[in-house]
Image (cartoon, rainbow, N blue to C red; front, side):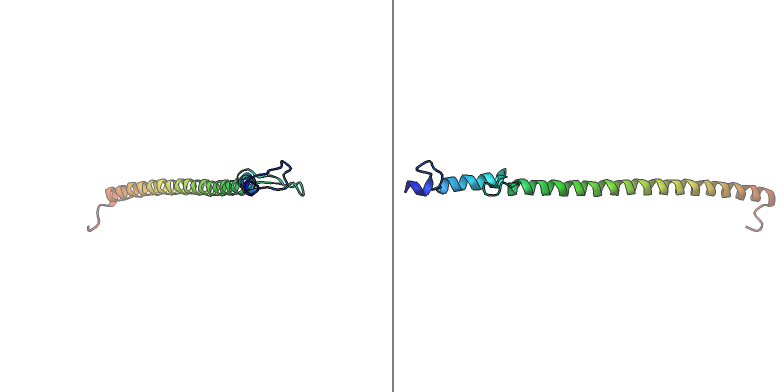
Length: 107
């Protein structure tokens, strides 16, 4: 029964459930190096965390780009409004000058 849960002889060949669970937990959380082929790997939680961090960075860039676009569009609208206000002011001044010179002409 002890063989079911642990390595009873210390040789590592007869891994029990507890050791298998420990190995799985290590793989899941931190990864490591595969003893068979020596390849390093991230655990799937670490890999998922990296993936989510990458998505967050991508979304933040999209937000930043959108904010830049809105700021430029706002500046453009303000410039157009200022130009419109200036033109209207000039037209009102011309209207007043024309009314002063020619009168209301039937109004």
